[in-house]
Image (tube, rainbow, N blue to C red; front, side, top):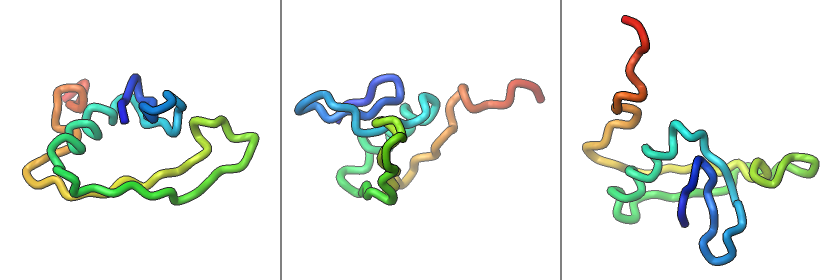
Length: 81
């Protein structure tokens, strides 16, 4: 699976199977890279037509990432203190 601009795609046929907000993609990819298989994704809901295809599936992503703090990068710091 590869991720481009928040869109999650299946490499076999390059068909969009989901979407994640752009600001979460880096954290998701870092977590997956460090999880060593300790994560799972499951379909929670299938939205019927007329939902756009990239919003048809609601997927829950769970895992265990020791020593990883999400949203700890500069992009998530407050704009004003």
